[in-house]
Length: 94
View 1: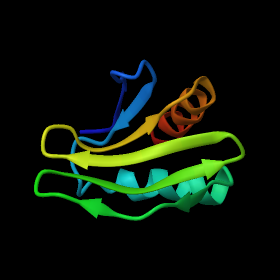
View 2: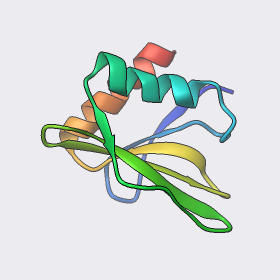
View 3: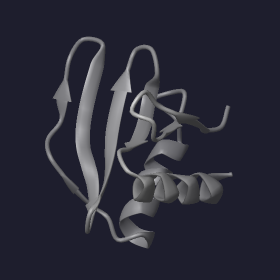
């Protein structure tokens, strides 16, 4: 199963990988860093059924990285510019 684009509760794009073991998740992260110039900041916080890993930043764009037992691994935009970035990453993976 490939990744899917959805609109999250915050009204912005989520790129969902469906499985934390997906080969496409690290590929998407590499695209953000090496091709699109994002850097990661933050730390990993893991609970028993959800977690946060370092977010991606570039200028005024932030892409959150998350996982939980219900949604698995996903990248989450919090702005229109972030939506555009995640749509671009999705197109690269398809």
